[in-house]
Image (cartoon, rainbow, N blue to C red):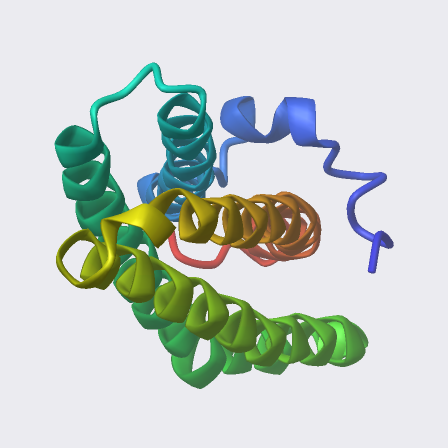
Length: 173
């Protein structure tokens, strides 16, 4: 997976002549996913530490959690159906790496589903049984931490494989 990375190290990407706006935009989406995952964890920690009001927390977790889940689903669906096949056609050496990333996407779906269920349950508890809300927020914190760790590893792996292919083959420019 790192065959091209040694010729195209991460710190050289932005200055490379084949580093197109589309690559920067794709990586910008990844930065947004990381930031949303971090926000979910930080907001939940602040709520559990009684540093954030319940109403504000529930609003933010609903808004940011929904944005993260829907954006990630759309993003990785596009990658699996359109982007990765394009990369594999350009350089078959990386087919197994791209398959691994697609497998991560399947795993991510399960992680996101688990997070969504915990988040929805917590939001419903505001009305049904507010006394359980903090306990469920603990579950949201665990699931959010799982998402954050998953994204950190997966997005770094993805960028380290994909960007060198794009630069090497002058794709997406």
